[in-house]
View 1 (cartoon, rainbow over the protein chains, first blue to last red):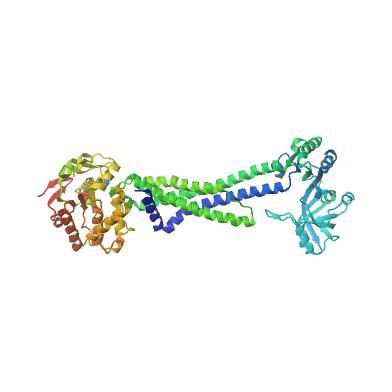
View 2 (cartoon, rainbow over the protein chains, first blue to last red; view 1 turned 60 degrees about the vertical axis):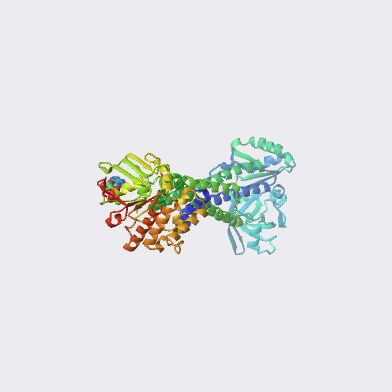
Length: 396
Length: 228
Ligand SMILES: Nc1ncnc2c1ncn2[C@@H]1O[C@H](COP(=O)(O)OP(=O)(O)O)[C@@H](O)[C@H]1O
Ligand SMILES: [Mg+2]
């Protein structure tokens, strides 16, 4: 028998029992679907984070508490960075560098009878817009050095807060509650948007000293440094390190620049992609066992057909090829359906979450499903090919 | 053409079924010669060894010992795939249970032996249509087995047996599942084929069916007895 004849034969056997064939492939469909979708989410996440980091600009240096990204984000890391460290940096670094300490906490905010229980309060210094250049004001001004030094309760609110509390009316000069204290609004920040479910505009910037005394905080979550020139970044990094080591040990802080941060995060998300793909691959394996199972049932059911074909001259290899091809068509078919649905789901998801289809995951899923067909179709096909024609003909 | 006149030449064929505790001698010391163009019947009571002999003649099973030459080829010690090749080339089977593929049409069933012989698609379909037409089934070419009567199904089986032009037709109780009229038709067809030169081996337990053959052999407890 030549290949096209075998193909027709296997195809006929598949369409004769459409429902069962579909159920057989369901496991493969789900497995391939999950591979495509989960890998897409993994690489989407990676692409997103990389983009976010590079948008900070190449001149930004971040000083974080703890000795690595993991301990900085992890629970229970003791935070030893304090405001004095930022002050020390300001005096020791080359004069062109901007240094802004940043503290964050969540609290409630109130204006007239409108209440928001989950506002992010960011304490920083008046030079913040010069350090973090992506910060732009829609109305008013950022609080001034004078206001900061006199301990004025002034705030710059994010765009979400602005629309919620003032319904796009004039906000400058109005007094709002942050926690149990009143603050005068001096500026409104431009909209930056929602990413990964976090609204970066539901925030209020206040002078860091005021914030620390109100909320009883003395550590800081980050010191942002803008070297203001890419070529100065290594020098500034060295100066930061030397300065901080006078008071702290190397375990107490880490210095991240755009590219080192990107590398670290891309390692993490790569691992995430692999882990997600691995989980999906297991489900594909389960799908393969489903194919083997149904093929074995099919061989038993078709014992008589196999015996007849052998009696009429079919060789072992003819029967083997027929059943193997059937399993491979089933699993490749399932693979193709899974790829189509996986691509559709990835594209849909990319509209409101991060998701990015990668060619390698599609190819991998396809090859994997073909391999599943061969591996799990082999045992049933061998069993079929070994049936003795008499036994098979006698079978009822 | 083969040099020998013997289609079947069996010498001392024995078949012993050896299961765990019992040893069944199904056939012992069978010597059987069937000449080209002959029409023989093999009869016997149930359990006498008819099916076993038919499986060995039909190359569906190997004898335990003895020599079997089929149309000039010693087939006693052939491997499975070589037996498949010889079966496909030399023998046309007509079964009691018809053994048609239930989801395939008459034509699709008839072409099966040609598929495994590697005959091209167009050629084999033409041949199948020709055979089915000769057997009066020209209106049933694309019918499935369950859309045909028993007699019609058995004629599809005969067409299938003739597909690769074998010299030997092996019929195992071909009338067993048929009414008298259809059974008669099948016997007429077999006799006509014999006239055209086919060698026919018919296995049956019915005496009036066996009587229509040119020669009758009788099996008793695995031994072949000539009953002229
Ligand atoms: N596969 C087998 N295993 C063991 N014994 C068998 C097998 N097939 C047939 N026999 C035995 O061989 C003898 C002949 O059986 P069989 O050829 O089927 O006779 P018949 O077809 O004339 O009824 C019987 O005793 C039967 O029980
Ligand atoms: Mg029998």
